[in-house]
Length: 274
Image (cartoon, rainbow, N blue to C red; front, side, top):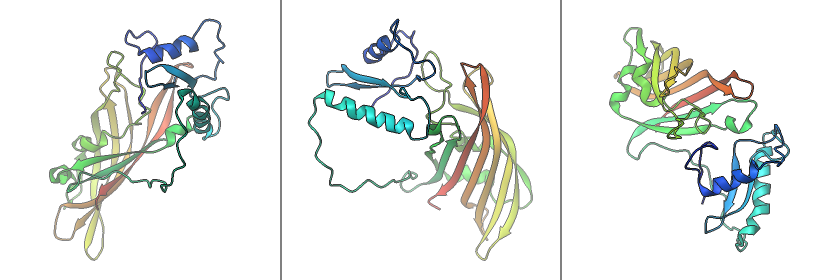
């Protein structure tokens, strides 16, 4: 079983296992390996909740090749697991599990969204996260076939644009609740225009700048360009399918250097099941 906790060293509600790790990690006189420790620690607990082993996610080699973090974690777990006193598991005879992307609720249509923060300094952040949003017929009405060019308010698409943030990397959290701020503001305008047609379908594109902001009270936000391509039947204004791409920049605050880096943030959208 895997669980996690996020917080700060001066929090009053630090779990016993976390406090045990931090008491050792930050003990006076212990080498801190300046520049080589992270804010992520792993701990193995026995069935009674006692810490039998722990290690820093970065390890003594620091940040390096993309697989260093993975290899270091696997190596540490292999060395630590025997301390749990568990019997060795028998060799697995099952074939490797296949990767299945999430789908909308059975019987429903929706959008599948791939989000990636292209941070060159942190390779793990570059792995895409996939979200699915169920879509009702009314959710598509603002993108209905344009008989003439028209402007679409990006706020009308908040239901799914609010998923365009770096999941698992969102560092902006409420200091009291420890919960990440959610995207609450979507603004911008897209120009929706008719495009090409085929024998059975016609297409339209919507392009514009979009700004996203969260539930914090300091005016934080980021923006990018959103491009959408919709497909319609020849005799209906309703959206049949959609593909889209968001390309923007996410401001990451460097607490040590007291600077802000603009990191590329990308998202791809595809309607499901079509």
